[in-house]
Every structure is written in structure tokens, then in C-alpha cells.
Length: 226
Length: 226
DNA sequence: CGACCGTATTAGACGCGCCGAATTCCTAAG
DNA sequence: CTTAGGAATTCGGCGCGTCTAATACGGTCG
Image (cartoon, rainbow over all chains, first blue to last red; front, side, top):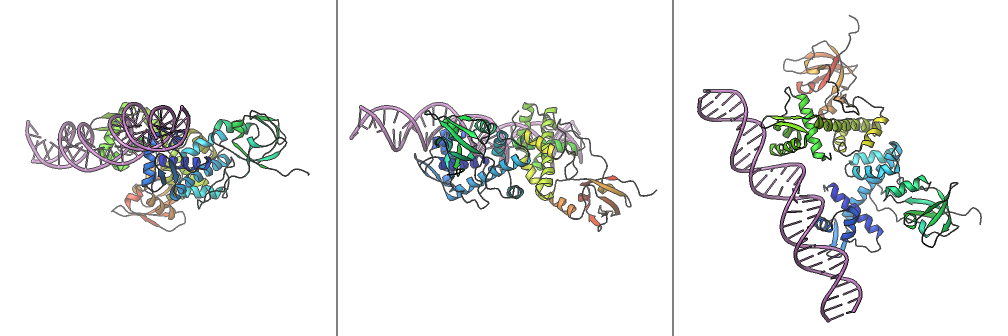
């Protein structure tokens, strides 16, 4: 197929926005913002995708990926998350360093590299942020389960499942305070304006503004005794 | 400075051709052949280099790298050889797989990645083929010492220092027959038309055509007893 | 139902890296 | 000293990915 690195970025962006948004179709402006380019640039790329059978488009309405387009996106995401896992585990990368590196390398590694990395890590199913890694057959990963921390109720005890890796600063902030995948949290307070205060497993309480708490996905934990 | 991957490839090519050739200046046609592009393409790149202070040029005569241009070339070569070493040692890459992978990745790894890989390998000074890895300060590595296998005399015992990685097929051919860096060889026959027959350390004799034997660099070994 | 406003698309342009064709330059042979 | 042949450069053009400015569309509010 021979797609450029730039094309791969567009397909990945569309896939991710498709997942986030409520509706199916992804709008030109959303892609433009995400990739920091202007809308006309997006439009011309989209028509190229349509010609190549990577996306279905309804003019002035938005796009959806075809199966082919989705496969490419999943391949790129698999590369990205495997790289994040590998760099963190074997090359001492911190959470804030790992994202940019993976964003560049994901387009340039071979199938061989992918295989070897996956084998070395023993076929991991989630990356260090808790995001699911598509398997080698590129089947779409299961929808994330559980709730968003911002929607939890006071008194609940939950376990962190996934921390969004969109913003490296948020990531570092959370990681420094012990809010990492696998950690148990008790929800101590939910302020009316959205602020959430949680106490990680044997740590100090941490207060998070709503838009940060919205990037943390959690699952309820069985209570100690009923 | 922000150079493109393509520019880095040109600078690396010029550096390597500069080392090989007798004279100083590298000719347009040599670069064109090496990179598999046409001469006009090279010319336009060379004038860009001149503007940017990366190369000195005498029109119709050839080109030489400036100190700046050389530093970029050495950085890329350092990336390439560190990657070769790392991929071979930690990700099970074979000699024939490693070159292409490194050729792509060398342009896309960060300084952080470079550092971490170098640290993991404990600052290696040669790559798996025996080629010297420029140090982190990017000083030009010492000129290769020793002779080319094609020029050795019958009866000599030599140790393999470096095997050129230009042609993956040649590499695989040699590696399969035990002609690897560090191995001792006794030169058994030198045919008038250039063919050399050697016997690796406790292996079967191997005959090599001259142009292959020219890609193997060796150093004399002290004789057992005088 | 129509006008308006925000969003999307089309139109035209630019730099990069590449090409083929035409031209200019160097050099070595006579 | 001249000239022919090979090498390098200039010229014009192309696809990619980007932009700005101009235009077309469509949902919403009066």
C-alpha cells in the first residue's frame, strides 16, 4: 500500500476521534485541530483517502474509516503502544519522554521490529498508561470498561485502569502523585465545580480539576467487607 | 538546524565517499550513484548545502563537507552503528536484517534515545561489523588500521577486524562461512585473477572473489612460534 | 421560509525532493 | 590549439503536504 508517515498520522487521528466522539463521522475541523493543520489541508487529504479506499466521506458532513483505513490506524497504534512499553521497560524512558519518541518511531519500524519487541515484552495487552495494545491481527481492542474518575461518587474505592496519554504534563502530574494504572484510590471529596479529591493507596490526598479527572479511567473495587 | 532525513542521507553519503576516494572532493556522479538518484537532483541538494554552510563546493569539480556538515554526518553514522549494535544484541536481528532497519531509524531517534542505547551497550566503540562508532562528541573516528584481505599474502595468519556492511548479501555470505570480526584466518591461496582462499579458525576453507575480499579488513596476528 | 453564520471545499501558490531534456563546462586526445 | 566526449549544471515540470483567500454549503433563528 505504501502510505506516507503523514497519511498514517491522519488515519490514526481519525480513528481516535471516531472513538471519542458521540456520532460516527469525524468532522474536518476536529482533525485539523488535532493535527495542527488548516482545514483545507485536511480536505485534500480526505479526498485522497477516499480515492484510495481508506475512508468513506460525505461532503460537508465528515468521514469514517473503511476497514482498510482502520487496519492501518490500528497498526500504527500498535506500533505506538508497543514502543511506549518497550522504551519504558528496557530503555529507562520516563512517561513524559516516551510519547514523542513513540510518535516519531511508530512510522518507521518494520514488521520484524514490531515482532521482536512484542516477543521481548511477551505480547503485552496494555501499554504503560493502561491503554490497550491492538493484537498482531489488528482486531479492534475492546471498548474501555469502567468509569471516568470525574464521575465517581464520594466514598467509592476504585482501581486506576488507564491514564490518557494525550497531555504529557497531565501525565507527569498524575504520575508524580502516585495516580498510576493498578493503584487503588479512595474518592474523598467531589466539589460541585468538578474538583475531585482522591487518596492513593497509602499516600497523601490528591486534588484534581475536572478536566484532569476526566482523563483517568477507573474500575470499582470490591469492598473489604460488606 | 532542522535537517530533513533526505539531507542527512546526502551528508552521510558524502562523508563516506570522502573517506573512500583518494582525492578530497566527492563528485556529483558518485553521490548520485550511491543514493540512486539522478545527477541534477544531487546538484540542487549540493547548492542547498552550500547556502547552509554544510559543504564547500567548486562548481563542476566536486564537494567537501564543512566541519558542520561533517558533524551531522558523524551524528547520523553514530546513530546507525549504535542501532546496529543494539538491534543485534537485544532484539535478535540478524546481520542482513539490521542494516535496513538502522538506515531508516537513524534519522528518527532522539538524543535521549541515543544516550540510553549507548549506556545500555556500555559505550561500544565498534558496531557488529567492526566499523568504528563515532563517540558522543562526534570526533572523527581513527582511520581504519590493517590491510584489506585481498592484499594479503599466502601463508599469512590474520584476524578479521571489519567487514563492510555495504552489501547485505556479501555480509550474509561471509557470516555464514564464519568470516566475522574477531575470527582468525589463514590465507591459503591467492589466485592470479584475484581469488583468495582462506581458512577460518577451525572451519572449512572459503574462497572469495577479489571484490568480496576487498570488503574485509584484517590485521596481522603474531605467529605461534618464530 | 429566508437570511445569516459558521464550517467545508475549491482555487491558487509555495518549498521540497525528484525527474528528463537541454545546455554548459572541463579535459584529454589529436 | 582545437575539438570531441563525458560530466555537471540549468531549466521546466511533477507529486506531496502545506498555506491563504475566495467560494459554496447547510443548519438555525427570526
